[in-house]
Length: 202
Image 1 (cartoon, rainbow, N blue to C red):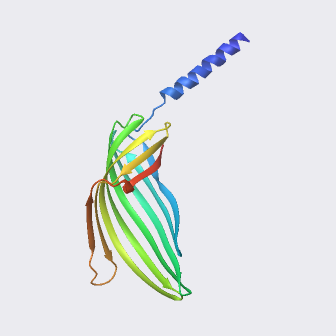
Image 2 (spheres, one colour; image 1 turned 45 degrees about the vertical axis):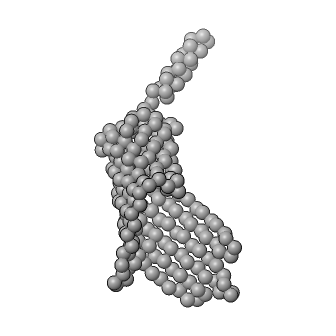
Image 3 (cartoon, rainbow, N blue to C red; image 1 turned 90 degrees about the vertical axis):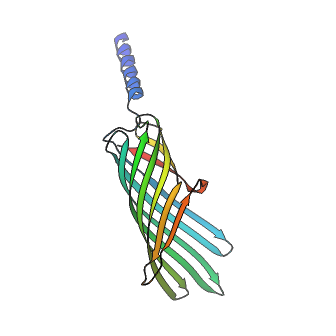
């Protein structure tokens, strides 16, 4: 009986020790997925607004500090209102695809900092309805953004991630002949641009 207890204690200690020494953080050859899924609903008077977002990303560490990846995204935004018994609605469907590169400081630790350079292309369709009358319009755009971020590993495979947009350039052009593009450049710290997410490493 004593031998069984001793063997059990040794096995338990070995298991705990293995968990403590299991690699936490990123290393060359690791693959990770991150991104966000969200839904927001807002009502102001008679105006109802709903927004659904899904934006997954996948990355791969080509070196111990550098990760390259790709992302896709879909956003559906709808505003509805009723004026003089006529239902008005404005729906925007946006599809996006992009690529990014990250450089990590302290990638093999529980806490790491990174800088991300990303480029994205988007196509949007806007449908405006007034009763039975419907009008569609389309636009194409791209943006380039530079953002810092942090990762904190809760376990060997899961980490919390936060990014904050600092430098951003975008250009949007309606998909009609003779249309003029709208260019926008921004730099600065805006707490509205903080993005929180969960990372899974495998």
